Length: 549
Image 1 (cartoon, one colour):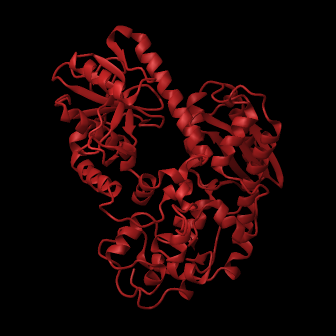
Image 2 (image 1 turned 30 degrees about the vertical axis):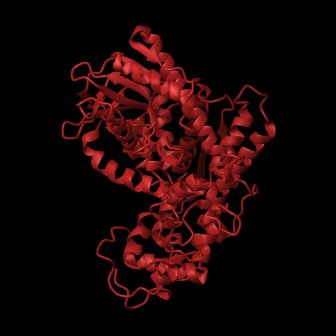
Image 3 (image 1 turned 180 degrees about the vertical axis):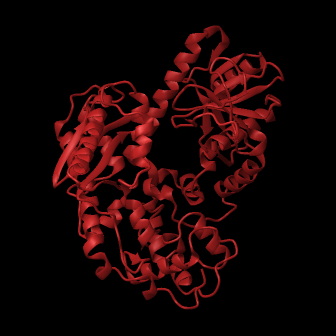
C-alpha cells in the first residue's frame, strides 16, 4: 500500500492485497505518516522471513522457467513499475502461455495495485489464472480417506486440476484475498479466466493448490471497500490489541509529536482489547463495552453473539487486570502431573528449514542435541536421532527400575510438528523413529504440555506465554532480549548463514536461552506443585454473583 500523485495532481491512495489482512489502524498510520518510519530498522524476524520468501520465489522461478523456457515470458524486475505493467499487458494481449513476475496497471479510480508471480493462460476458457508463490505451507500430507473432503490441486508443469486425496488444505485467508484482488484486476481488462480459479505454490513446492475464488469474492469486495475507505480517510480507526502488535512499529512509536503510541493509548484508555484482543473486542464494542472497566462492571447474561471462552472468565480477566493480579486460579487446587524421572524439552528451529537444537533438562543437568551445520542439512537428522535415542533410553531405564517417567514441554505445537517432520524427512537414517512411534509417544500420558496445564487452571490477564507465566513463579531469563524472533538472528550469526565466519558467542547465547527455557518449565512445575495455591487468588475472589456464563 502507498499513496501517490493521481492523474489530476491530487493525492491518490493505492492499496495492494497485503493490506487486506491485518490491523486497520496500522493501515491508516502507514498511509498517513509514511515519513515517520523512514530509517526505522525492520524487525529481524520479519526481515528474515521476507528474505527467505524472496529466495523461495527465485528457486521456483528458476525451476519452472528452466524446465521449459519457451512457454514462459519473464517480466524483468529491474524495470520501473510502469514499464513492467506495460510489458505484462502486452504479453497477455499476445496470448503468452505463462508469465512470471507480472505487474498489473494501477487503478487510480479503485485504488487497486498488485502483481502476481505467475499468470497462467487458461487454454480451455481463455483469460488468465493468477498463481501466487508463498513461503508458507499451503497443504499438509495425510493418509487418504474416502470420507474426507479432498482439495483440488494441479501439477506444477501442466494445469490439470484434480481432487487430491494425499493432502489437506491449510487455511490461508491472505492467499485467497490476494488471489481475489488479482482476479478483480484481471477482470477489469477482460483478461480473467471464467473458471474463477486461482492457485498457490507453497513452501513444499510440490503442487499447485487451487482456490475457488467464487467463494471469496463477496468477502473480498466488502473487505477492500472498507480498507480503501480507511486509507482515503473516510473511515476512522482507533488502536486495538491484535497479535500483529508484537511486530508493529506503531505499537511503541507515536505517529507525530504530541500523539501517543498504540501501546500508550491502549493503556491510557484502559482499552478492552488489552484483555479481550482481536475479534473478542469487536464483539464487546458492539455492546457498548469499550474499556476494561466497562467489562469488569458487566452483570447479567453474556452477549448473544459471544462465541469464545466462557464470558464469566473474560469478565474475571478484566477484574484481575484492573487490580494488577497476574493470574487467577480456576480451580480449588492446582495440580500438575509429576513423575520420578522428569525431562524438560525445548527445541529451536529456523523458519521452515528444520529444528537444529533439542534442549533437555534432567536432574538439573542441561543436555543440548544440536547441529551447527546451516539448515537445511542432513546433520539435523543425526542430532534428532541422538536426542530421540537418549530420551527413549531415559524412559526405558525408568521403567526397568520401577520408576515413573514424564517429558515436559511448553506449548507442544512446535515440538509435535518437528517430531513428526523429523521422523518423516529423515526416515531410514540410524536412530530415526517412525511416524507411528512418534504418534504413540505424543498421544500418550508421558508427554506433558505445561501450557495446557496452565491454560486449564489459570486465567491469565497478561497472556499465557512462558515468558509471561514463569516470572510469576520467580524465574527470569539471563538474556533480556531472549525470544523466538531474536534467536533466529542469533542463529544466522552463529552458523555464518550468509557465508561469514560463525560467531561462537551467538551459539553460546542460543544455548543459554534454550537452557533457560527448559529451566523455566521446571521452575513453573515446582511452583504449581508447592506454592501456587497459596499465592494465586481464586476465581471466586473476582467473580460477582450476578455474572452469567
